[in-house]
Image 1 (tube, rainbow, N blue to C red):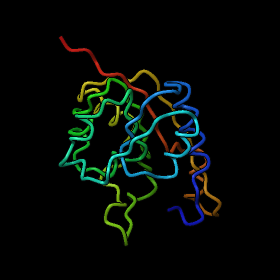
Image 2: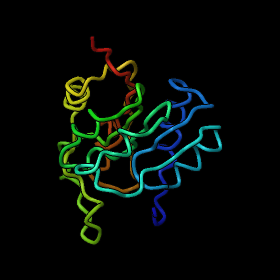
Image 3: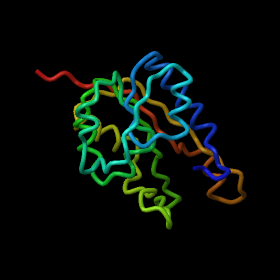
Image 4: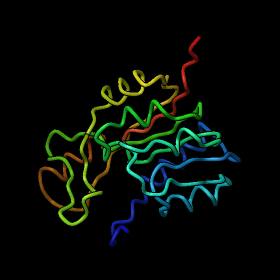
Length: 176
């Protein structure tokens, strides 16, 4: 899946954030197909069920019908054309989600070989916060971190200082 570029730092930071804000044991609906991070969560004591690769822009049944304690979405929402729909339809009252942040010095990511591996959105933190708020969520905790790469150049230098990932823990706002 990662062809020699395994995301050690991202996995470590994501797992620490999840542990801190929603410790195991818990049942998790993880948006996206089963992936290496699923196994990390299971080793921590989470019971994880992944979605099946359905187009979450069109089919949100998985989040509407799940009885999971929490929904996780790690680098998923940037791939959707309309992430508002699936975020609004989540039945669970807890959400942990991360996104890659928009980098002003780099174009949006687009795989030339895999049509599912493209970013339709590259959010700034305030845009993602607003999206969650409009969909009925209150952010309880948030964190950002950088993603340096081992290359020489102006853009690799900027990656040492510019946050690349943004993660939030949110709770459903009670409506009366």
